[in-house]
Image (cartoon, rainbow, N blue to C red; front, side):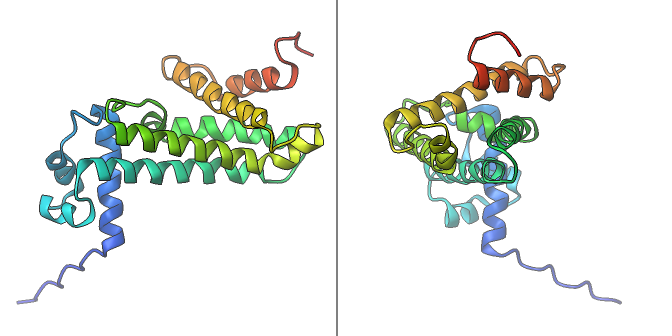
Length: 203
């Protein structure tokens, strides 16, 4: 009789990643309040007691998932902002990257931008902190481009413009969820037209 090889034990970081992936799906699908830790543990394939070793409460788990997904988003679009090409080419790549993120990771986009737990003061505070950090990070990456067009990146107005761009693009992404037949390139061209010429005529 041949003995089967013992199953390899999953490392702590790997198990944590499995849990946060399951939590992302369920939080995005059901919302914070309707989701349960037992349901998330089952989806992750771990015992609930094991999950408590990593996340002592549902709130802590949600905040961890929010931080994780926000970091992924900033890194994803940041690579385009700081990439090669002219400022316009990099902006086009960045806009396209955001819509690519929304298309390929709809659960992450929904959790980051469609709050479902705003009645919880702690979560509301953390959400706002994540949003501010995201805006500051993008503004910092755009600083040189802003200087080249005569905008001081240290001025509050610069961050306001970045906030407008981020929230505006996400509004388009939400609209796109209901009109998936619209090509991504059409969205990119529309946003670039607005950014480059305001509401003036197309060139």
